[in-house]
Amino acid sequence: MKRVLLAIAVAIWLSGSTLWLTHLWLAHWEEFPQWPPTALVRWFVDLYSATNGEETRDAEFWFGITHFGILMSLFTWLCLTTWQRLLKRLRQRNLSQS
Image 1 (cartoon, rainbow, N blue to C red):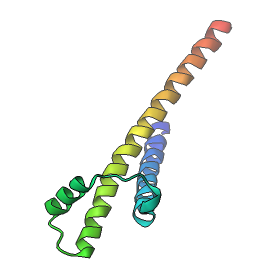
Image 2 (image 1 turned 60 degrees about the horizontal axis):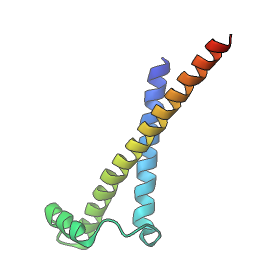
Image 3 (image 1 turned 135 degrees about the vertical axis):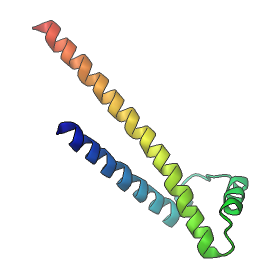
Image 4 (image 1 turned 180 degrees about the vertical axis):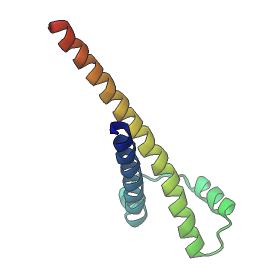
């Protein structure tokens, strides 16, 4: 049951944080570093076949969801791995002291 709750919590975290970061990136783009480069944006818009502003905005949304999803997945994996290793060391230390 504990693993199921952890999986649900991680899924909610990844979904929420990815959507939130994508929203921030689209709404306040001037606050973020200039990413992606212009050539990559043009390639992605051509790949998406965007012909007007609405389709370009959709392409930006999918670009943000993809990139922030990958970024947050890596960040979450790093945090969970670090947390597990820390707990393992603490348990070993407690066992060796007793």
